[in-house]
Image (cartoon, rainbow, N blue to C red; front, side, top):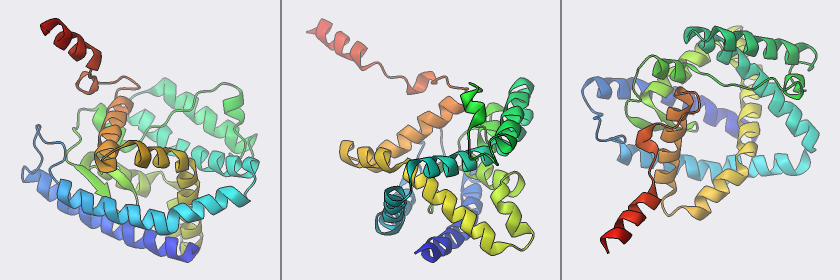
Length: 259
């Protein structure tokens, strides 16, 4: 079963590169407009359905089995390990955004957990109340004014945008430690680490995805809107842009006054 997930990752990685290239051309050709955040909805829904089927028949069962048989402290340790590796990407993008104080703090967090936290398996920095921040190149592009571009759904990866998919590719080739073994010929190790990372992330999202499926009439639209709002907030360091704020109570009040 792990081999199947590895093969899926290889296929999705190559497919993602092709999709990014095609979408870049589409964007340059004026495919995305300001009034349509999802000009590729037909294609996106197809990829979303493929991801959903793959998840339900393979990835989700593996994540559930992993959660069932693995003690919570061990799961937490592996989650801390992968989160700590992500700090390398965060530090670089702190620097690219000129957030030098954050870069210093995040680098210190990485060093503390990598040493005293035994390669990051123990979140010592978290116990010392050092905040956990996550920055990526997609956020960096957004920080410097680059728009989302068209919303896209990537194979296996899930919701994204042209800007964020480009950022993901950049981070993967520059600061993702899991890619390093591949660069030195340790393909098997790189694949094993990637599979473990996917399972860890999917285990984290078990409850969230169940809630989306149960609470939303259109899970695709719900996921898309939630993703775009979350990314806009991350680019603005936690603030929610005005275009995403809808005060339904004001609308109700207005209707009541008219009556």
